[in-house]
Amino acid sequence: MVDFDVVELPEADHVETGETAPEFTRPLVTTEFWEDRSLSSLLENGPVLLVAYPMDGAFPATYVWNEIADRGWTDAIDVVGIGISTPYEHGTLLEERDVDARLFSDPGAEVLEEYGVTNDLDGMAGIVDARPAVFAIDEDRTVRYAWVAAEHPEFPPYDAIGEAVDDLTA
Image (tube, rainbow, N blue to C red; front, top):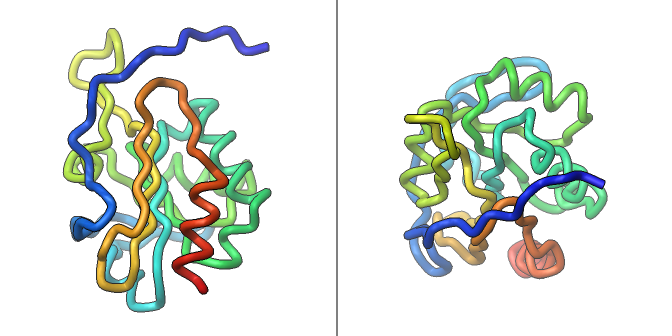
């Protein structure tokens, strides 16, 4: 059994269901390469499930991506992650954990801050990480579903997200 403390996080002023998802451009990483891409460019091909998650080396990242794979969401919707890890670290996660998604690299956490999903790391001055969060975004950049963690670690309500994915892809 993993030994860790559950920590309540401060209230987050995050993007809500019905709001317009903030536009951004960041390096989008695959197992083969990365390139700057905008959220809007992804939405040209259909809705996106944007998954904010803690740095690649943290155990919650592995759990979240394993669950997404087990549920087969990447077959139904464009699932993209976003986190503070570098493109190199994202590439390693994708390859070593066989993650079937692309990952935006946001090491300065500017996009995560714009979405209201940052978390100050205890004991690490000036270092923030992604608070676990999931946003289902339609082609018009309207957020159709939003979930943001209230404690750490906390894992997404996968059944509710699955319903949001079904609604967006029906």
